Image (cartoon, rainbow over all chains, first blue to last red; front, side, top):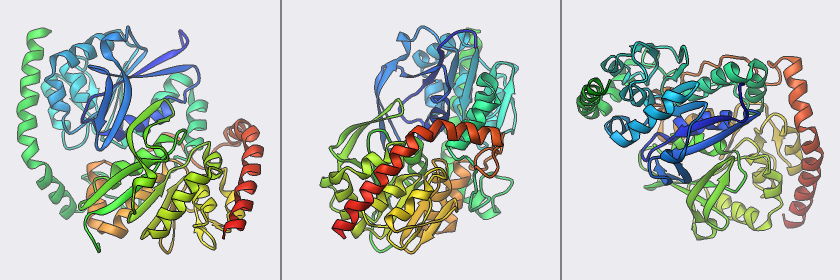
Length: 231
Length: 231
Protein backbone atom coordinates (compact mmCIF):
# COMPACT_ATOMS: atom_id res chain seq x y z
CA UNK A 1 0.00 0.00 0.00
CA UNK A 2 1.43 3.33 -1.07
CA UNK A 3 0.20 5.33 1.89
CA UNK A 4 -1.31 4.74 5.31
CA UNK A 5 -4.09 4.64 6.18
CA UNK A 6 -5.68 3.21 3.06
CA UNK A 7 -8.88 5.25 2.78
CA UNK A 8 -12.02 3.29 1.91
CA UNK A 9 -15.05 5.40 1.09
CA UNK A 10 -18.61 4.07 0.94
CA UNK A 11 -20.80 6.59 -0.90
CA UNK A 12 -24.29 5.89 0.42
CA UNK A 13 -27.76 7.28 -0.19
CA UNK A 14 -31.29 6.96 1.20
CA UNK A 15 -33.02 3.91 -0.22
CA UNK A 16 -29.89 1.88 -0.92
CA UNK A 17 -30.10 -1.86 -0.26
CA UNK A 18 -28.39 -1.93 3.11
CA UNK A 19 -26.66 -5.31 2.71
CA UNK A 20 -24.92 -4.02 -0.46
CA UNK A 21 -23.16 -1.67 1.93
CA UNK A 22 -23.02 -3.49 5.27
CA UNK A 23 -21.69 -6.76 3.81
CA UNK A 24 -18.51 -5.31 2.31
CA UNK A 25 -18.22 -2.79 5.17
CA UNK A 26 -17.98 -5.64 7.67
CA UNK A 27 -15.02 -7.12 5.82
CA UNK A 28 -13.24 -4.05 4.47
CA UNK A 29 -13.42 -2.02 7.69
CA UNK A 30 -11.34 -4.73 9.38
CA UNK A 31 -8.51 -4.42 6.86
CA UNK A 32 -5.34 -3.61 8.79
CA UNK A 33 -3.96 -0.16 8.04
CA UNK A 34 -7.20 1.15 6.59
CA UNK A 35 -9.66 3.88 7.46
CA UNK A 36 -13.30 3.52 6.44
CA UNK A 37 -15.42 6.56 5.70
CA UNK A 38 -19.18 6.53 5.11
CA UNK A 39 -20.47 9.60 3.34
CA UNK A 40 -23.67 10.76 1.68
CA UNK A 41 -24.65 13.78 -0.37
CA UNK A 42 -25.88 15.94 2.50
CA UNK A 43 -24.33 14.01 5.40
CA UNK A 44 -26.13 12.92 8.57
CA UNK A 45 -28.75 10.20 8.74
CA UNK A 46 -29.34 7.86 5.80
CA UNK A 47 -32.46 5.68 5.96
CA UNK A 48 -32.35 2.31 4.23
CA UNK A 49 -34.84 -0.55 4.36
CA UNK A 50 -36.09 0.25 7.85
CA UNK A 51 -32.65 1.05 9.25
CA UNK A 52 -31.16 4.49 9.74
CA UNK A 53 -27.41 4.96 9.40
CA UNK A 54 -26.47 8.03 11.43
CA UNK A 55 -23.49 10.37 11.34
CA UNK A 56 -22.49 9.94 7.71
CA UNK A 57 -20.08 12.55 6.44
CA UNK A 58 -20.80 14.85 3.52
CA UNK A 59 -19.33 13.65 0.21
CA UNK A 60 -18.16 17.17 -0.66
CA UNK A 61 -16.14 17.22 2.57
CA UNK A 62 -14.16 14.14 1.54
CA UNK A 63 -11.02 15.27 -0.25
CA UNK A 64 -10.28 11.89 -1.78
CA UNK A 65 -10.04 8.17 -1.19
CA UNK A 66 -8.03 5.15 -2.23
CA UNK A 67 -11.09 2.98 -2.83
CA UNK A 68 -14.57 4.20 -3.69
CA UNK A 69 -17.47 1.78 -3.23
CA UNK A 70 -21.03 2.54 -4.35
CA UNK A 71 -23.81 0.22 -3.18
CA UNK A 72 -26.94 -0.50 -5.19
CA UNK A 73 -30.59 -0.05 -4.44
CA UNK A 74 -33.97 -0.34 -6.08
CA UNK A 75 -33.66 3.44 -6.55
CA UNK A 76 -30.14 3.34 -8.02
CA UNK A 77 -31.36 4.95 -11.24
CA UNK A 78 -33.03 7.78 -9.36
CA UNK A 79 -29.59 8.35 -7.86
CA UNK A 80 -27.96 8.05 -11.29
CA UNK A 81 -30.10 11.05 -12.30
CA UNK A 82 -29.07 13.10 -9.26
CA UNK A 83 -26.50 15.43 -10.79
CA UNK A 84 -24.95 16.45 -7.47
CA UNK A 85 -24.44 12.85 -6.30
CA UNK A 86 -23.11 11.73 -9.67
CA UNK A 87 -20.70 14.67 -9.79
CA UNK A 88 -19.23 13.61 -6.43
CA UNK A 89 -18.87 10.02 -7.64
CA UNK A 90 -17.12 11.27 -10.78
CA UNK A 91 -14.76 13.45 -8.73
CA UNK A 92 -13.96 10.84 -6.07
CA UNK A 93 -13.83 7.93 -8.52
CA UNK A 94 -11.56 9.90 -10.84
CA UNK A 95 -8.94 10.23 -8.14
CA UNK A 96 -9.29 6.80 -6.51
CA UNK A 97 -6.93 3.91 -7.02
CA UNK A 98 -9.89 1.53 -7.05
CA UNK A 99 -13.41 2.25 -8.27
CA UNK A 100 -15.92 -0.31 -7.06
CA UNK A 101 -19.59 -1.10 -6.66
CA UNK A 102 -22.01 -3.74 -5.49
CA UNK A 103 -25.26 -4.67 -7.25
CA UNK A 104 -26.90 -1.80 -9.16
CA UNK A 105 -24.22 0.51 -7.81
CA UNK A 106 -22.47 -0.17 -11.13
CA UNK A 107 -25.25 1.75 -12.90
CA UNK A 108 -24.34 4.79 -10.80
CA UNK A 109 -20.66 4.34 -11.67
CA UNK A 110 -21.80 4.10 -15.28
CA UNK A 111 -23.79 7.32 -15.05
CA UNK A 112 -20.66 8.99 -13.69
CA UNK A 113 -18.77 7.93 -16.80
CA UNK A 114 -16.47 5.59 -14.90
CA UNK A 115 -17.29 2.37 -16.76
CA UNK A 116 -16.78 3.32 -20.39
CA UNK A 117 -15.29 0.30 -22.17
CA UNK A 118 -15.08 -1.64 -18.90
CA UNK A 119 -16.45 -5.07 -18.11
CA UNK A 120 -18.74 -4.84 -15.09
CA UNK A 121 -21.10 -6.86 -12.90
CA UNK A 122 -24.56 -5.82 -11.76
CA UNK A 123 -27.63 -7.41 -10.20
CA UNK A 124 -28.75 -9.99 -12.78
CA UNK A 125 -32.13 -8.34 -13.39
CA UNK A 126 -30.58 -4.97 -14.23
CA UNK A 127 -27.34 -6.02 -15.89
CA UNK A 128 -28.69 -5.41 -19.41
CA UNK A 129 -28.72 -1.67 -18.67
CA UNK A 130 -24.93 -1.45 -18.41
CA UNK A 131 -24.29 -1.04 -22.18
CA UNK A 132 -26.26 2.23 -22.12
CA UNK A 133 -23.27 3.58 -20.17
CA UNK A 134 -20.69 2.06 -22.50
CA UNK A 135 -19.94 -0.81 -20.10
CA UNK A 136 -19.69 -4.47 -21.05
CA UNK A 137 -22.04 -6.58 -18.90
CA UNK A 138 -20.35 -9.55 -17.28
CA UNK A 139 -22.30 -12.24 -15.46
CA UNK A 140 -19.44 -12.92 -13.05
CA UNK A 141 -20.18 -12.63 -9.34
CA UNK A 142 -17.12 -10.42 -8.96
CA UNK A 143 -15.62 -8.76 -12.02
CA UNK A 144 -12.31 -6.97 -12.29
CA UNK A 145 -11.30 -4.76 -15.16
CA UNK A 146 -8.17 -2.82 -14.30
CA UNK A 147 -8.86 -0.62 -11.30
CA UNK A 148 -12.60 -1.31 -11.46
CA UNK A 149 -14.01 -4.08 -9.23
CA UNK A 150 -17.76 -4.70 -9.38
CA UNK A 151 -19.91 -7.22 -7.56
CA UNK A 152 -23.21 -8.76 -8.66
CA UNK A 153 -26.45 -8.52 -6.70
CA UNK A 154 -26.49 -7.69 -2.98
CA UNK A 155 -24.88 -10.73 -1.31
CA UNK A 156 -22.16 -10.75 -4.00
CA UNK A 157 -20.77 -7.85 -1.97
CA UNK A 158 -19.18 -10.35 0.41
CA UNK A 159 -17.37 -12.26 -2.33
CA UNK A 160 -16.45 -8.87 -3.80
CA UNK A 161 -14.98 -7.71 -0.47
CA UNK A 162 -12.80 -10.79 -0.10
CA UNK A 163 -11.54 -10.36 -3.67
CA UNK A 164 -10.70 -6.71 -3.03
CA UNK A 165 -9.04 -7.56 0.31
CA UNK A 166 -6.82 -10.12 -1.38
CA UNK A 167 -5.83 -7.58 -4.03
CA UNK A 168 -5.00 -4.80 -1.59
CA UNK A 169 -3.86 -6.54 1.59
CA UNK A 170 -2.99 -10.02 0.33
CA UNK A 171 -4.62 -13.44 0.43
CA UNK A 172 -3.53 -14.10 4.00
CA UNK A 173 -5.42 -11.09 5.36
CA UNK A 174 -8.48 -11.99 3.27
CA UNK A 175 -8.45 -15.61 4.44
CA UNK A 176 -8.01 -14.63 8.09
CA UNK A 177 -11.01 -12.31 7.88
CA UNK A 178 -12.99 -15.04 6.13
CA UNK A 179 -12.25 -17.40 9.03
CA UNK A 180 -13.11 -14.78 11.64
CA UNK A 181 -16.41 -13.97 9.93
CA UNK A 182 -17.01 -17.69 9.34
CA UNK A 183 -17.76 -17.25 5.65
CA UNK A 184 -18.44 -20.84 4.64
CA UNK A 185 -21.83 -20.31 3.05
CA UNK A 186 -24.37 -23.12 2.95
CA UNK A 187 -27.56 -21.83 1.35
CA UNK A 188 -30.55 -24.07 2.09
CA UNK A 189 -31.85 -23.53 -1.46
CA UNK A 190 -30.27 -22.99 -4.88
CA UNK A 191 -32.45 -20.09 -5.98
CA UNK A 192 -29.78 -17.42 -5.97
CA UNK A 193 -29.43 -17.08 -9.74
CA UNK A 194 -31.96 -17.03 -12.55
CA UNK A 195 -30.17 -20.04 -14.09
CA UNK A 196 -30.65 -22.13 -10.94
CA UNK A 197 -34.01 -20.89 -9.62
CA UNK A 198 -37.10 -22.85 -10.54
CA UNK A 199 -39.10 -21.47 -13.49
CA UNK A 200 -41.96 -20.69 -11.12
CA UNK A 201 -39.80 -18.69 -8.71
CA UNK A 202 -38.12 -16.86 -11.58
CA UNK A 203 -41.43 -15.99 -13.24
CA UNK A 204 -42.84 -14.75 -9.93
CA UNK A 205 -39.86 -12.53 -9.32
CA UNK A 206 -39.96 -11.14 -12.85
CA UNK A 207 -43.65 -10.32 -12.36
CA UNK A 208 -42.78 -8.45 -9.16
CA UNK A 209 -40.20 -6.20 -10.81
CA UNK A 210 -41.88 -5.77 -14.22
CA UNK A 211 -43.58 -2.46 -13.35
CA UNK A 212 -40.30 -1.05 -12.07
CA UNK A 213 -38.30 -2.27 -15.05
CA UNK A 214 -39.98 -0.06 -17.65
CA UNK A 215 -39.42 3.05 -15.56
CA UNK A 216 -35.83 2.13 -14.74
CA UNK A 217 -34.98 1.52 -18.39
CA UNK A 218 -36.25 5.00 -19.28
CA UNK A 219 -34.22 6.49 -16.44
CA UNK A 220 -31.08 4.66 -17.55
CA UNK A 221 -31.49 6.06 -21.08
CA UNK A 222 -31.94 9.54 -19.64
CA UNK A 223 -28.85 9.22 -17.43
CA UNK A 224 -26.84 7.88 -20.37
CA UNK A 225 -27.98 10.76 -22.61
CA UNK A 226 -26.80 13.36 -20.12
CA UNK A 227 -23.49 11.48 -19.83
CA UNK A 228 -22.75 11.84 -23.54
CA UNK A 229 -23.23 15.59 -23.19
CA UNK A 230 -20.67 15.70 -20.40
CA UNK A 231 -17.93 13.48 -21.72
CA UNK B 1 -49.08 -17.30 10.49
CA UNK B 2 -51.44 -16.94 13.43
CA UNK B 3 -51.57 -13.16 13.46
CA UNK B 4 -50.59 -10.28 11.24
CA UNK B 5 -48.18 -8.64 11.19
CA UNK B 6 -45.62 -11.19 12.27
CA UNK B 7 -43.41 -9.20 14.63
CA UNK B 8 -39.68 -9.70 14.22
CA UNK B 9 -37.54 -8.14 16.93
CA UNK B 10 -33.79 -7.62 16.65
CA UNK B 11 -32.37 -6.94 20.13
CA UNK B 12 -29.19 -5.00 19.44
CA UNK B 13 -26.42 -3.48 21.55
CA UNK B 14 -23.34 -1.27 21.12
CA UNK B 15 -20.38 -3.30 19.93
CA UNK B 16 -22.33 -6.04 18.21
CA UNK B 17 -20.90 -7.38 14.96
CA UNK B 18 -23.06 -5.44 12.54
CA UNK B 19 -23.33 -8.14 9.85
CA UNK B 20 -24.79 -10.57 12.43
CA UNK B 21 -27.70 -8.15 12.47
CA UNK B 22 -27.78 -6.56 9.01
CA UNK B 23 -27.52 -9.87 7.11
CA UNK B 24 -30.68 -11.44 8.55
CA UNK B 25 -32.39 -8.04 8.71
CA UNK B 26 -32.03 -7.66 4.95
CA UNK B 27 -33.85 -10.95 4.36
CA UNK B 28 -36.35 -11.07 7.22
CA UNK B 29 -37.52 -7.46 6.88
CA UNK B 30 -38.74 -8.33 3.37
CA UNK B 31 -40.95 -11.16 4.60
CA UNK B 32 -44.51 -10.41 3.46
CA UNK B 33 -46.89 -9.72 6.33
CA UNK B 34 -44.15 -8.96 8.83
CA UNK B 35 -43.09 -5.98 10.87
CA UNK B 36 -39.45 -5.61 11.89
CA UNK B 37 -38.48 -3.84 15.10
CA UNK B 38 -34.95 -2.92 16.14
CA UNK B 39 -34.57 -2.23 19.84
CA UNK B 40 -31.76 -1.73 22.33
CA UNK B 41 -31.61 -1.39 26.09
CA UNK B 42 -31.81 2.39 26.26
CA UNK B 43 -33.07 3.06 22.72
CA UNK B 44 -31.63 5.60 20.30
CA UNK B 45 -28.27 5.31 18.59
CA UNK B 46 -26.32 2.04 18.66
CA UNK B 47 -22.69 2.18 17.47
CA UNK B 48 -21.24 -0.92 15.88
CA UNK B 49 -17.95 -1.38 14.06
CA UNK B 50 -17.76 2.19 12.81
CA UNK B 51 -21.45 2.40 11.91
CA UNK B 52 -24.17 4.02 14.01
CA UNK B 53 -27.68 2.61 13.88
CA UNK B 54 -30.05 5.42 14.84
CA UNK B 55 -33.62 5.46 16.12
CA UNK B 56 -33.68 2.06 17.82
CA UNK B 57 -36.60 1.53 20.15
CA UNK B 58 -36.24 0.73 23.84
CA UNK B 59 -36.52 -2.97 24.64
CA UNK B 60 -38.71 -2.28 27.66
CA UNK B 61 -41.17 -0.50 25.37
CA UNK B 62 -41.66 -3.61 23.24
CA UNK B 63 -44.59 -5.57 24.61
CA UNK B 64 -43.72 -8.76 22.79
CA UNK B 65 -42.69 -10.31 19.50
CA UNK B 66 -43.21 -13.42 17.42
CA UNK B 67 -39.52 -13.87 16.67
CA UNK B 68 -36.64 -12.63 18.79
CA UNK B 69 -33.19 -12.45 17.20
CA UNK B 70 -30.03 -11.61 19.13
CA UNK B 71 -26.85 -10.88 17.14
CA UNK B 72 -23.36 -11.66 18.39
CA UNK B 73 -20.34 -9.52 18.97
CA UNK B 74 -16.85 -9.68 20.39
CA UNK B 75 -18.42 -8.21 23.53
CA UNK B 76 -21.32 -10.70 23.70
CA UNK B 77 -20.21 -11.90 27.11
CA UNK B 78 -20.08 -8.36 28.48
CA UNK B 79 -23.70 -8.18 27.37
CA UNK B 80 -24.42 -11.59 28.90
CA UNK B 81 -23.39 -10.03 32.22
CA UNK B 82 -25.65 -7.00 31.77
CA UNK B 83 -28.57 -7.93 34.02
CA UNK B 84 -30.96 -5.42 32.51
CA UNK B 85 -30.34 -6.55 28.94
CA UNK B 86 -30.49 -10.21 29.84
CA UNK B 87 -33.76 -9.68 31.74
CA UNK B 88 -35.33 -8.19 28.61
CA UNK B 89 -34.10 -11.10 26.49
CA UNK B 90 -35.58 -13.52 29.02
CA UNK B 91 -38.93 -11.70 29.03
CA UNK B 92 -39.17 -11.28 25.26
CA UNK B 93 -37.78 -14.72 24.47
CA UNK B 94 -40.13 -16.31 26.97
CA UNK B 95 -43.15 -15.02 25.08
CA UNK B 96 -41.86 -15.41 21.52
CA UNK B 97 -42.86 -18.18 19.14
CA UNK B 98 -39.28 -18.32 17.88
CA UNK B 99 -36.12 -17.60 19.84
CA UNK B 100 -33.12 -17.07 17.59
CA UNK B 101 -29.55 -15.82 17.43
CA UNK B 102 -26.59 -15.40 15.14
CA UNK B 103 -22.96 -16.03 16.09
CA UNK B 104 -22.17 -15.42 19.78
CA UNK B 105 -25.73 -14.16 20.26
CA UNK B 106 -26.43 -17.73 21.40
CA UNK B 107 -24.26 -17.09 24.47
CA UNK B 108 -26.61 -14.23 25.39
CA UNK B 109 -29.63 -16.49 24.87
CA UNK B 110 -27.83 -18.99 27.08
CA UNK B 111 -27.25 -16.42 29.81
CA UNK B 112 -30.96 -15.65 29.69
CA UNK B 113 -31.70 -19.30 30.41
CA UNK B 114 -33.30 -19.89 27.01
CA UNK B 115 -31.02 -22.69 25.79
CA UNK B 116 -31.14 -25.19 28.62
CA UNK B 117 -31.06 -28.67 27.10
CA UNK B 118 -31.15 -27.24 23.57
CA UNK B 119 -28.79 -27.88 20.70
CA UNK B 120 -27.38 -24.58 19.49
CA UNK B 121 -24.89 -23.07 17.05
CA UNK B 122 -22.32 -20.37 17.80
CA UNK B 123 -19.24 -18.85 16.20
CA UNK B 124 -16.78 -21.77 15.98
CA UNK B 125 -14.19 -20.13 18.26
CA UNK B 126 -16.69 -19.61 21.10
CA UNK B 127 -18.95 -22.63 20.68
CA UNK B 128 -17.28 -24.55 23.53
CA UNK B 129 -18.76 -22.03 26.00
CA UNK B 130 -22.35 -23.12 25.30
CA UNK B 131 -22.37 -26.04 27.76
CA UNK B 132 -21.80 -23.59 30.62
CA UNK B 133 -25.38 -22.50 29.93
CA UNK B 134 -26.74 -26.03 29.67
CA UNK B 135 -26.81 -25.94 25.86
CA UNK B 136 -25.51 -28.65 23.54
CA UNK B 137 -22.99 -27.21 21.06
CA UNK B 138 -23.74 -28.10 17.45
CA UNK B 139 -21.33 -27.36 14.63
CA UNK B 140 -24.13 -26.92 12.12
CA UNK B 141 -24.26 -23.62 10.25
CA UNK B 142 -27.94 -23.30 11.15
CA UNK B 143 -29.33 -25.38 14.00
CA UNK B 144 -32.96 -25.88 14.91
CA UNK B 145 -34.13 -27.33 18.18
CA UNK B 146 -37.85 -26.82 18.58
CA UNK B 147 -38.62 -23.11 18.61
CA UNK B 148 -34.93 -22.21 18.87
CA UNK B 149 -33.04 -21.40 15.64
CA UNK B 150 -29.38 -20.46 15.96
CA UNK B 151 -26.84 -19.56 13.31
CA UNK B 152 -23.06 -19.99 13.40
CA UNK B 153 -20.57 -17.15 13.01
CA UNK B 154 -21.53 -13.82 11.41
CA UNK B 155 -22.20 -14.70 7.75
CA UNK B 156 -24.16 -17.78 8.84
CA UNK B 157 -26.88 -15.23 9.60
CA UNK B 158 -27.87 -15.26 5.92
CA UNK B 159 -28.29 -19.04 5.76
CA UNK B 160 -30.09 -18.76 9.10
CA UNK B 161 -32.48 -16.13 7.71
CA UNK B 162 -33.40 -18.24 4.69
CA UNK B 163 -34.04 -21.23 6.94
CA UNK B 164 -36.27 -19.17 9.22
CA UNK B 165 -38.09 -17.64 6.23
CA UNK B 166 -38.85 -21.09 4.86
CA UNK B 167 -40.20 -22.19 8.24
CA UNK B 168 -42.43 -19.17 8.76
CA UNK B 169 -43.42 -18.03 5.28
CA UNK B 170 -42.70 -21.12 3.19
CA UNK B 171 -39.98 -22.21 0.78
CA UNK B 172 -41.38 -20.18 -2.11
CA UNK B 173 -41.03 -16.89 -0.24
CA UNK B 174 -37.53 -17.85 0.90
CA UNK B 175 -36.45 -18.82 -2.60
CA UNK B 176 -37.89 -15.66 -4.15
CA UNK B 177 -35.97 -13.51 -1.67
CA UNK B 178 -32.84 -15.55 -2.34
CA UNK B 179 -33.18 -14.79 -6.05
CA UNK B 180 -33.85 -11.10 -5.45
CA UNK B 181 -30.82 -10.80 -3.17
CA UNK B 182 -28.79 -12.96 -5.58
CA UNK B 183 -27.58 -15.29 -2.85
CA UNK B 184 -25.45 -17.68 -4.88
CA UNK B 185 -22.26 -17.39 -2.88
CA UNK B 186 -18.89 -17.98 -4.53
CA UNK B 187 -16.15 -17.38 -1.96
CA UNK B 188 -12.75 -16.85 -3.59
CA UNK B 189 -11.11 -18.84 -0.77
CA UNK B 190 -12.10 -21.79 1.42
CA UNK B 191 -10.96 -20.34 4.75
CA UNK B 192 -14.40 -19.94 6.30
CA UNK B 193 -14.13 -22.82 8.79
CA UNK B 194 -11.29 -24.02 10.99
CA UNK B 195 -11.55 -27.41 9.26
CA UNK B 196 -10.92 -25.89 5.83
CA UNK B 197 -8.58 -22.99 6.62
CA UNK B 198 -4.86 -23.58 6.24
CA UNK B 199 -2.99 -24.41 9.47
CA UNK B 200 -1.12 -21.11 9.17
CA UNK B 201 -4.28 -19.02 8.85
CA UNK B 202 -5.94 -20.92 11.71
CA UNK B 203 -2.95 -20.53 14.01
CA UNK B 204 -2.72 -16.82 13.22
CA UNK B 205 -6.38 -16.29 14.01
CA UNK B 206 -6.14 -18.26 17.24
CA UNK B 207 -3.19 -16.10 18.28
CA UNK B 208 -5.27 -12.99 17.61
CA UNK B 209 -8.12 -14.06 19.88
CA UNK B 210 -6.12 -15.85 22.58
CA UNK B 211 -5.95 -12.84 24.94
CA UNK B 212 -9.70 -12.33 24.63
CA UNK B 213 -10.51 -16.01 25.11
CA UNK B 214 -9.29 -16.25 28.71
CA UNK B 215 -11.34 -13.25 29.74
CA UNK B 216 -14.44 -14.41 27.87
CA UNK B 217 -14.29 -17.85 29.46
CA UNK B 218 -14.23 -16.25 32.93
CA UNK B 219 -17.17 -14.06 31.97
CA UNK B 220 -19.14 -17.02 30.65
CA UNK B 221 -18.63 -18.88 33.93
CA UNK B 222 -19.78 -15.80 35.84
CA UNK B 223 -22.88 -15.41 33.67
CA UNK B 224 -23.66 -19.11 34.04
CA UNK B 225 -23.28 -18.94 37.83
CA UNK B 226 -25.77 -16.10 38.12
CA UNK B 227 -28.12 -18.04 35.86
CA UNK B 228 -28.25 -21.00 38.26
CA UNK B 229 -29.29 -18.63 41.04
CA UNK B 230 -32.19 -17.39 38.93
CA UNK B 231 -33.59 -20.56 37.48
